[in-house]
Image (cartoon, rainbow, N blue to C red; front, top):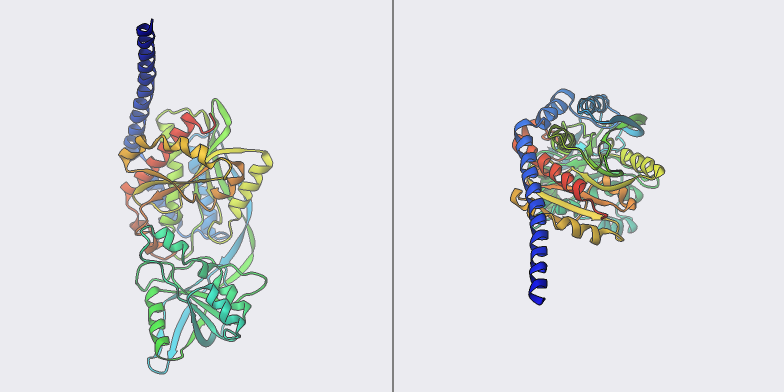
Length: 464
């Protein structure tokens, strides 16, 4: 009897193991086909070339942004989705105006031009510009301390904290420095400064300034520009020798908000249509480049996921939704609108994947979620690592994305696509973020990686 029971138990185990192994093999073959199709029949690169070369910069409120909305709407319609629609949102309309000027005035060095770009949402200086003595600080705490001592009044504050070069992931270095750009100018204005200069957010030393958003709080406003890292170094050296004045002039201004749109398309799930799997990127970009990596790559990644799965004849169990968000760069109004409408409808995003870190070689995904659910759901996803590792992909806890992060209260799992980060801040928010810096194969590998995760999420779910 014991021998018979042991044989039955062994046979049962082998049957179950064989079924699991068979299913794993099916998944492996399907994922391989995702990569094969994407690398040979994908459209992401062609879409990106049109978006960046024919349409160009797409700052919210601009003609380029409006053209990008219509272009991606047409692509979604061509992808034979069940429904495609535009979701209206009111967005900021900031314009840069004529080229900025910035000069350092030193008794030892004379007058030296400094490469600069106005920060997004900044007020302009007026036609006469601003000129004042410079006070260098390394962060917001130091600025506040000096401000309380009355040492910033009538001055130009120079925020000069560098990227931490010891950070292997340059996204972490960015996170450690970007607060001085986002909140530094309003902090300076709070204590009477007449202007703000910010070291560009990059680990590269060059003469290319990086723009980016700044936000004013409580009516505290002063004109603000980013300096290239070489210009910041030059100003730093001069300040070590003597007091220095800087003159700068900008012509930017904020216009009344404009009507724009998120572009949304979906394929309804055949079994669990109320469980949504979102893939998305942000359609807007800064005006000085064409937004190839930030975030044209993320947009075409997301469109390619739908294209490839459709092309393979895949019928999703859950609803697959593709979202092109508007106004991530200087306001987040697209993400706020999407969240509000989704919550009002009582929707449940089982998973949301954002691609907003460029089109470089895929390294994997970071995951985030509400504390109540994260560990349980993430354990299920980790079980898929053997299927991802052959493609150099990993999964780790971390952030997701500025847009999909708004959905955390729905208690699904949120993902950020994570490509190699080493070159991203060579181009981020600069004129150099152009189509020629995107590698076609790397871009396609990213789309295949995201499509793979979507396939696994759809097939196995997170709530079963």
